[in-house]
Length: 177
Image 1: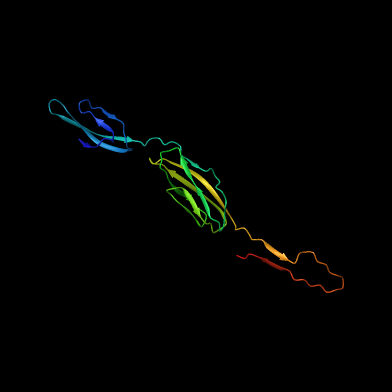
Image 2: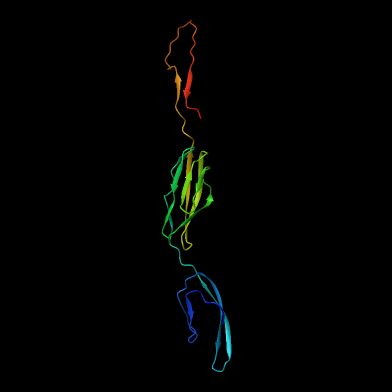
């Protein structure tokens, strides 16, 4: 006579049986009123708690650690999920990405150009279409930019003589950043 049954359940007024297959989790409060042949009534408040379906394990790939990157060089890595109900959304729930990298929550793609060398540790959580989650801790090592070759001239072999003044200029050349 008040409140509502969980979605998917029905009440048989003739038998008092509540039956069916619930389709949504939650707490449902309702009142049942019974009336006898003489018109006398009695009522009782009831609560039914419907728990969410058990979640299957959700796995994230690739397995850690993620490939290393280099400062100043474009980086891209896709995190994927399996084992639940697609589609998945992703989030970083602990730690942080290396400076210069961004995370796309819809696709699971980590991309950008790292700007600082170091090691970053973070956790990616995948949430499936029915709210089940899986998570994986990752590490990305960002290496310093590779140094360009530097050439010294003249070559290292030279000769001098005892008692004779010696002078030689060594120069360096190569790409400067």
